[in-house]
Length: 121
Image 1 (spheres, rainbow, N blue to C red):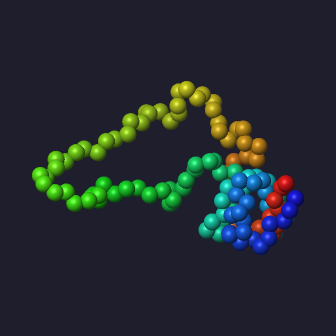
Image 2: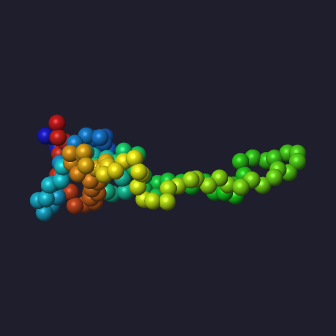
């Protein structure tokens, strides 16, 4: 076990993907895989490829990619993605991706609440 110090985003981010132990000021311990550290928060055990809504960008429908010369083009309908009418995929009954994770579900904590952060070797 090796202490990660100082508790700054730039230093902590170097250890993403590695198992860590967080000890808070009240003595609670949390063990997990370091996912990311940004915005004053440290996140453990986040699903690979998971993104928050604030991180994703949606393209605007009215933006033109360039100037068109020649004839005016016809308007085309936007394609709509086909989605399922039920909330689960019929081929993966009782499938829980978090079940096989040894450290549990995703967990986020403010950096101000952390007393010690240890890298588990």
